[in-house]
Image 1 (spheres, one colour):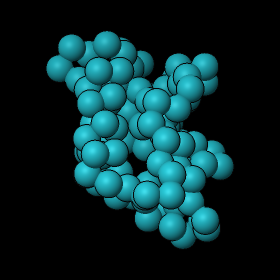
Image 2 (cartoon, helix red, strand yellow):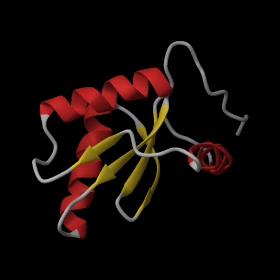
Image 3 (cartoon, one colour):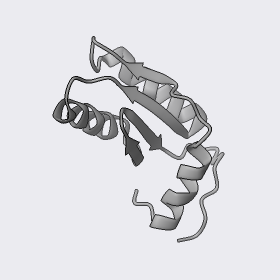
Image 4 (cartoon, one colour):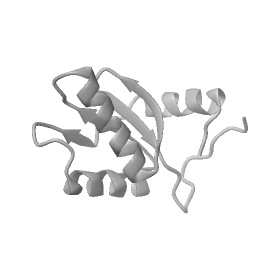
Length: 98
């Protein structure tokens, strides 16, 4: 799924007030953490994940793995906070057209 710039801007605005629902710490990205992220995406559609990694390369690899495994779309990555969007069957968030 690809988002237009207008849709990404809308989602950034919607996510602004959100707090991270999942935090990845020293244990890294485990199956349990991935399952929790997937459950949160199915329930909320738009979530923030805090990735605490030593360096940028590790953080980027973790973020890429999350996106690949959950089939979510990266809305933005600022510092250690990754914002993800994955539409559910109920379509709780309606995106603007293009």
